[in-house]
Image 1 (cartoon, helix red, strand yellow):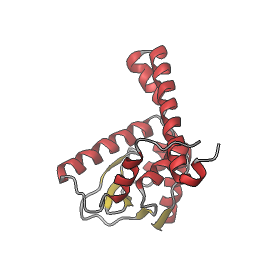
Image 2 (image 1 turned 30 degrees about the horizontal axis):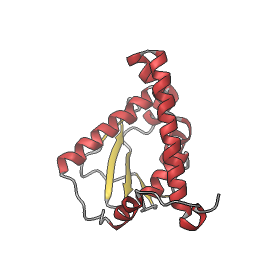
Image 3 (image 1 turned 90 degrees about the vertical axis):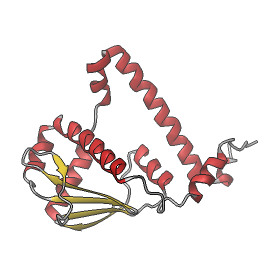
Image 4 (image 1 turned 120 degrees about the vertical axis):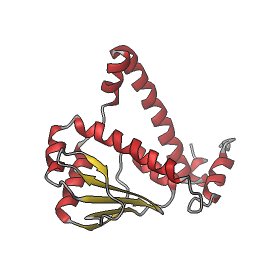
Amino acid sequence: MATQSPFSWLGTFLQQLPLSQLRPPLWALEEAQRRLLSLVNHILLQEPEALARLARQKGSVIRVQWRSWAVDWVATPAGLFDVAPPDAPADLSLLLTQTQPLVLLGLLLQGDKPEVRVEGNVQLAAEVNWLVDHVRWDIEEDLARLVGDGPAHALAGGAQTLVQALRQFLLNRAAGPTQQAQP
């Protein structure tokens, strides 16, 4: 016998939210973009081949857009990213076509690439695709620098369990109520 989650109202609530009309303050968006940029650059710094590939694209502007939100980053001579000037035209535009946040999150948690509409410089697109395919964040190694190997391994294991549970939840949500009832 299938039981309904006591949090089913949350999924309904999130689907009814007019996310396109919700706008955080500009300072919050800029700060979030800077934090994301710092994380991406931290990950890139751990992969010399990624730095070399991105350095070859110095000055190229990449725009990543989901719904009405977009970030514009420019490749630096050091092989990292920086915030692009506001008036800089994008050499490469990547538009995430999946509009549902839970579905997009589920794809990312499964390690799948979401559908992306690509426009612009083909060579730059190939380099970005290589980065997506080959650069991974070893969060356990970063945690080990802070708290030691043992605690880092335990925290990473707990995080993997949490991600696995979230992944299963999202898969069940995507399957729909008729398929959830089957054992």
